[in-house]
Length: 279
Image 1: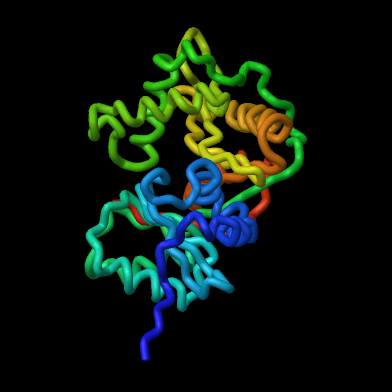
Image 2: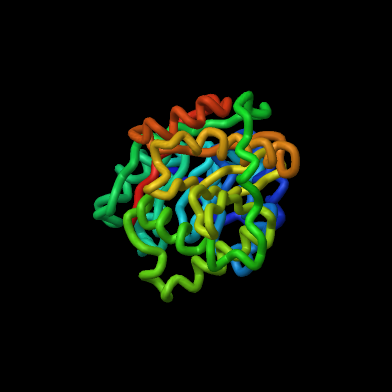
């Protein structure tokens, strides 16, 4: 007999979801931020939270919105989530999370959801709770509200380089620009400017009470190889630890060896492996 105890979770189960997310503060950070901000009511959360397990013992959750993100998804949970999702049209732009769960979901969903534009199976997940030993770059600072026009071209360049498509392709980039503006307004966007141009940037794209997750790290092409990234990242980590969260985390493509060396010099340590499927 097939048993698939998957259901859409509601606000009454929020505490159980939060307890589960606390067990994986780095791999589940994106989901934890959304739940903290919007709760579990689908009509205001811009997504659904699916749960696996009984009402007395929630074992795994899966966020389904712009991204599909499994958290603490065991093999039975992955199979159960995939059974449910295979019958739905794909609306998400990516699957991202702990590598074993993401790749397990993709194995089961690819016949109906495929093809993927890219699969990145090995993305080291890193974290630190210590102020970097590296001296911070004093020119790296939080971006001010009036500087969005300076930051936005660098953000577009980073996104296009990292994801492989331009954020301007959809709605002429209006939604992406709003996201950049929101990060600046929240004091979560950092940059170093030279002659008014961004030569380094990074954002605290996800913030929870457990961690601040850095994304969007970018160095202008003409400045690469000059050794500015380590001190710049040290400045970001120092400010985030002192002002935002008790830890700083990020994930990086395994083949990006220069970035991995920068993060290691800034004190980041491995805390797992993520994977991403891009559509």
